[in-house]
Structure formats: C-alpha cells, structure tokens
Amino acid sequence: MSISNNSHAGAQQLPPSVASDFDKMKLWDMDAEDIHKIVLAELEAQLIDILKLPEAPNPENNFIESGLESLQALMLRNRLSDRFGCTLPGTVAFQHPNPHALAGYLTKCLMEDRPAMGNIGSWATGPGPMPPGQHQLLSPAQYESWFHQRQNPGSCRANMPFGLRLLGPLDTELLQPCLDEIARRHAILRTRYLEREDQVWQVQESKSNMALQRLDWSNRTMAERRQAMQDWMRAQIQERPFDLSKLPLWRTYLVQIRETEHYLLFVFHHIQIDRISFHLLQDELWRLYAAFKENKTPPLPSLPIQYSDYAAWQRRMLTPERLMEKQTYWNQLLGHPPASLRLSKTEDKMPAAFSKTITRPLGRTRTRELENFSRQQGNTLFTTLVTAFSILLYPYSNRQSVLIGAPMSNKRTHRRLENLIGHFSGKASLHIRFSDKPNVVTLLQRAQRMVEDAFMRQNVTHMQLQLLSNEGEPCAPNQSFQVVINFIPVSPPPITSHSTPLLKVQYLKNMGDGVSAPELTLVVMYEQSENGNRLNLGWRYRVGSLKAEQIHQLSERFESILKDMQRNPEEHIDKLV
Image (cartoon, rainbow, N blue to C red; front, side, top):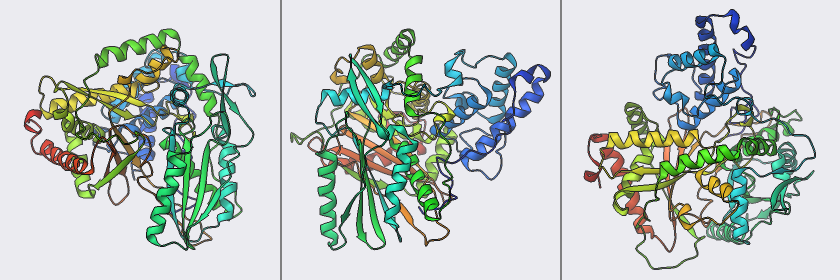
C-alpha cells in the first residue's frame, strides 16, 4: 500500500447522512411511505460507503450478491442503529436479505416507535463518557486476557506482534511524535492494571512511556538479516513478557535495512489491542505522519469516548440475569463438547509457545469463484471456508461434530466505537454437527446459522461468560480451542504525502510465528482491492504436535474439498473425505 493524507481507510470520517436531521418526534406527521423513502435512502448511502460502490445497488438485490460480508454487515447494523436510535441484531442484513426488505423492517420498527429487539435503554443509546478521574473495571475481553496472564505469570502468550515494511524516503524523526499523539488520543495505550479488593481496575496515566527504539541492520547480508529477525522475534515476542501493572504495555522498533527501506515493528499486550485496532492505529499513524510532514492539522475523527467508557458500559449491561440468559443459551447450543481431534502423529514435545506458518495463496480467479459460489448458496465467503474446514477435520473427529474457535475482532456494536483502539475481540465457539451425514448444502446452511448466532452474541464469548460467571475460577482444559479459523479482511489504505516522494507500506507476514497458538489455526487473509479480491491461507501449526509435511497435505486437501463443494453441492460429506 502507499500512504496519503487524503486516504480512505477504517478510521475515516463518515459521509454526511441523509438522516442526520431525522427526528423521531416527526413520525406522527409522516406516513409509512415517507419513512420508508428516508430509511431506504440512508441504507443506500451507507452501502455505498461501506462497500465502496460507485452508485447505490438495486434495492431488490440480495446483500450477499452485492458483496456484503459478515464484518461489513455488522458495521451496517451499527450505523443504522446509531442513525435511527434502535437496537438491531448483528444478523439483520441476513434476516432481511435486500435493502428494500430491510428498509421495510426498519420502517415498521420506527412506526411502532420501539427498539427492534425490545432492549430499551443503554443498549440503544450506547456507551457514553464516564466522569473523569474514575477508575473502571475491565471489559470481559480484557478480563479474559488479564486472567490468563495471572494464571501464567511470566507468560508471553498474550504478546501480539505486528510488522510494517516501509519503502521510500522516511523522516524517522516524525515517528515518535506521531506515536505519542496516538497514545494521547487513545487512553488505552497509556493504561495499566491494578488488583485491589478482589477487583481489577484500569488506571490511566498521562503518558504511555513508550520510546521508539532504533536498530541498524543495513550492513548485514540477507542471511544475517533473516537471522537477526528470528533473534528479535524470539527475544521480544517469545521471551519478554509484559508486567500489566507497569507502563509501557507496547514496544516499537524502527529497523533500518537500507536508506530507503525500514521495518517498523510493534509488540503489544493483547489486553490493549486487537488486530482491527492495529489497522486503525497504523492508519492514524500515516495520517499524522503526512500531516506533520506538511505542518497541517491531522484529519482524524474526534473520539467522543474512550475504551474504559466502553468497558464500564458493557459491565453495566451484564446484569446477573443477562449473564444467566447468555450462559444458558451457549450451554444449550454447544451441548457436550466434542472429543479432541486426533491430529497429532508425533511424540515430540516442543514448547507449547513455538509455532510456524505455511502460506498458500489462492489467487484472484480462484477467490472470485469462491465468492460467486458463496453468493449462489446464499451464505458468506467466511461460512464457505468454515464449512470446508469442518469437512477437512471430519476424519479426525468422532464423526459427530467439531468445535472450531473463530476470533470475532469487530465487536464494535455501536458506531462511536468504530474508530476506537482497544481489545474488542474474543473467540466465538462454532460447534459444527454432522452426525446425520449431511450434504454440502445442508452443512453450509447449518454453518451459516451458527455464524449468525455467533455474531449476534459476540459482545461476550462463551469463555468470557465462564470466567465472569465463575468469578475467576481456572478454566477447564476443554474450554481452550484445539483448532481455530481466523478470517481477516484487509483493505490497505493508499496514503501519499503531496510534498514527498511516494512511501509504500506493506505488512510483514507470519509475525505471529513463535507465539503461543492452538494446535492448528487457519489464518485467512482476505485482501480486497479494485483489481479483485484475493485469499491467502496461512496454516499455523504447533511445532512438536504437527509436522510441516502434514500441514502441506492438509492444505492441499482443503483446496480439493473447496473444489468438490463447488462441483457437487448435493454431495454428502462422507464422499468428500
């Protein structure tokens, strides 16, 4: 990607809304047809912005046919809830399959002048700023991260590394002030955590104490640089834990490779940030860099609340009754956990934290074929990949069901959270059942319902509920995931400084190697661009449990299953394995 101070990225200011002056009190003077027109116009405006369309889609076209994926559907829900002051389910775009149908549903809700899901109060209004100077409790996602750190003192399993490759002339002196400004804007980056009276509190400080460190590898050979990177990853990711009671809780390194090439490396504790938040952070970084370079005011959106406000709001909503309701739902949905998968064939006992990744790109043509197949079946691309992954694991299971963890990294249930850095993620539990030997179509429908349920209830995951309900009792072994699928949409923002030559920014791949990982993780990088979307499949495996040869075989079999699903969707899964 390249960098510009007029880019369009995740942290951009939203376009003016046609409903910005919408007053619900005027409903009494409007009929259903007029309300429907306003709602449909608002819906079309948001679809144009979210999907980057040149014009509004046909209101009768299915959302999935228009290219709306799960995360984008959640963003659409957030914005509509914010515009019209009603609480909508995360799957509303899939329950009402096209703009016309969804506009009709919203019109009915507005005519009745009640929240769509009957949740009156703070869920509709969303989180607001808390009084200054008050310490707040941790969010459920933060508490899960803190709890695991307490159970494993000195562990590095929560270290989250990210890396950027910078090509072009770089003003290195601007990076520290840019990072300082980001920490000033986002209090989570200058927050530490203290345990008092059996409670864990967020304590915000005035500064993050993060100092950019510089390394010079410019005089090293290619082989020496590779070794230096491996040494850095081992030292900073695998062997250097964070103390959650002390700042900083993130580290940044600028590595010079040559005069016009640098690596910008980050390590965060997961309690501060998730993957989507890092995309927001690096988007702000380059907007600030371009503005500071030209002595201009940075074009960044204001932040009406901080992450601690969100955490306080979420805690208020999780009453004992709601906790019990959510726990009952997940217990009924998941039932008895399936037996462990028989993936491992090796007796080697390497450290659990050591992992490697094998990457296989699918290419734009193959990706487009899978996108089209998913639309034809009425489900998302993510659901198609989850289904294929479950079929791949079928022979290693008891042939009854598999339990797959799926990180939900966009639990930003209100629009005012879209530009906020913080730990919003958690792993949803996808319990895919196939004891009745279903065909591909049936399994796709089953997986789609499971994914929709997970998105609707992603505010608190099953594991976070267990921790909150048990008041911090240690997790049972079967609560950790043996296999995980991580779907990551990537839309690199183009950023260019008008007064300097082009600076290109690329993500460094496989930065998570060596980090504590499940036995097998399928990392799906969904790269979206005007030239066509592309899937990159990263197979991350625990060394000592699986071998590279096995991973190559699994990856080849997975791609074969995808082709077989497309070729004959009526085929029963027994014939595909």
